[in-house]
Image (cartoon, rainbow, N blue to C red; front, side):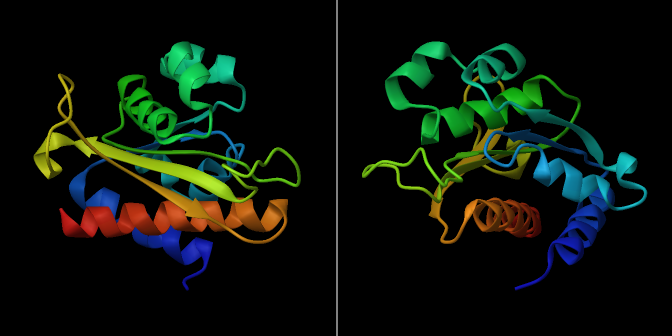
Length: 172
């Protein structure tokens, strides 16, 4: 597996090639994806902004996630991750968005949603894939289960988020 710095460099090249920018909507990672991206000098050319929406209120206020959705599905759910990704695009000037919401631990897990469960969502313009809704964004999501302590879960989340963005950009 490639290290985070290598992933960020590859992502930057792919975004710059298209003239696109990235936004992040992060819960369980607390801004680690954005921090990893902005560790690279010159990232202001392709990194637009990051939303750290750790609380449910922040998800609603900053990204427009419907509080009823959180109440019905829980903050760690596919619907919330997808809503966060679309909200990231709607509330930024970026063309690509990644959202993560999960349970990094050591507590907070349940039988249904164990520690290490992370929902991801990625969104980009619909000309890159099938349109979703009136906003014409292409959207995909995925549930991953990571092993290890809190730090390891969060870093695996960052690497998976970046790896998948690169893969999606290559396939479009």
